[in-house]
Amino acid sequence: MAAAQEPVHHDVIAQIKAEGLERSQVMETFNVLTNVIGPRLTATPAFKAAADWSASQLEAWGMSNVHLEAWPFGRGWTLEGLTLEMTIRFARCHLRGGSCSPSRRSPRSSRATASHHPHHTHS
Image (cartoon, rainbow, N blue to C red):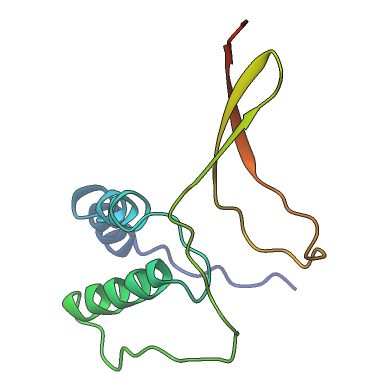
């Protein structure tokens, strides 16, 4: 027995296409969350800023009952920057790093992204 095929609603498809192609706010939303607010980890000030902005944006778009819900996560942290300078007998190095997401490594180990800028100082 063959199943009956549902009718295609071309007017609805046209409305969906028009919404996406003519009134999309994807790029504006992407810009605010990635470039204005920037990277964020859970329980950080940037995470709170992104959540607050998203909630207010949903309200501006007409959504009702928009609210944030808390859950027990623990502590968050923010690293402003890091500079490490090392001097050895014939070379001087500058390492600059940024923050990585926290891991459950032992307190004696750490992980970071670094760039190396050698400055040879032969004396």
